Length: 282
Image 1 (cartoon, rainbow, N blue to C red):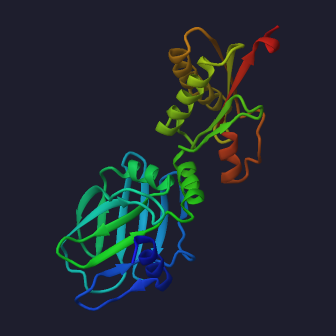
Image 2 (cartoon, rainbow, N blue to C red):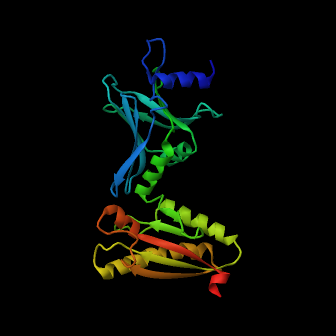
């Protein structure tokens, strides 16, 4: 039996609770496998239910990075070690890639090392696995329906808040309330934009327009929008020293959406990077 046939059979059954001489493999049937994201400015979560026996989750909190947790929802796990690894999907080539080691504590596993890389690998189709040395128990978490949840998870963290400009040439960054600094994902988006512009003919300059929502005093909003815009401009000036970069701060002016809802306020907290071409500058 090849690997694809074996895993198809496993996921068709959902969970195999086998005898003592066979592995206990836990996974949700592929047609029911899903990841779901939720959260707010203080805690972002992306979860996957492993049938009815365990809950896997990625958790991100400000100042604590991203961790991966597995919560066993049945009785019977007293302790011991467990290895986290990336594995190829049944239709992929390659071997398992060890990521981190952990210990069961109160029916839970916690992993902190290498998790950003795990997320990137799963976004590219790899699956996640947990094995216990000396035990036949194994957990498999597919990346089926992972992309949409991952986009929402990154958006919650402020990392996916880098959107193409309306003309397809610029970039828009969104911010959580009160946040002044750029996230790692936003810096990556700006660096990618700078790399593209460095090789693009006809670019004369960059206009950085910064906005806030209507919460807070107008003078503070204006100052905050200036600080965000200047941070973006500083990064672009370092990477594109030959281009003029102008910053315009507007505070709460020109909202894109209502300021009466959290989602609307999030859309309004933005820095828009516009590219000035030769024909526009003339």
